[in-house]
Image 1: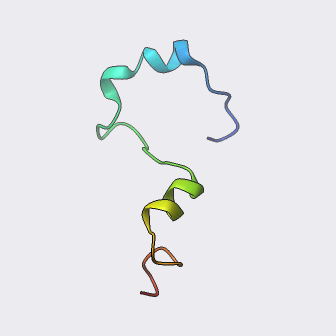
Image 2: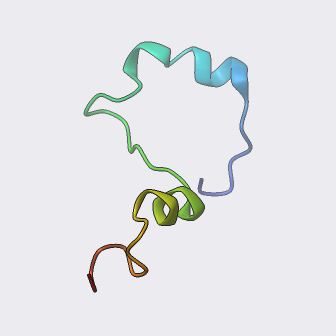
Image 3: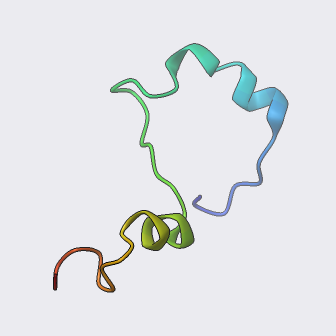
Length: 46
């Protein structure tokens, strides 16, 4: 995200904050399409 490489040690410093309001939670496009199955256009055209 934003061109920063993933670093597990840096992520573990924030493990208690994952999922709270201070994080910008997201997942990849592939997963977003997968969870919208069987709708082709992310449930906009059902």
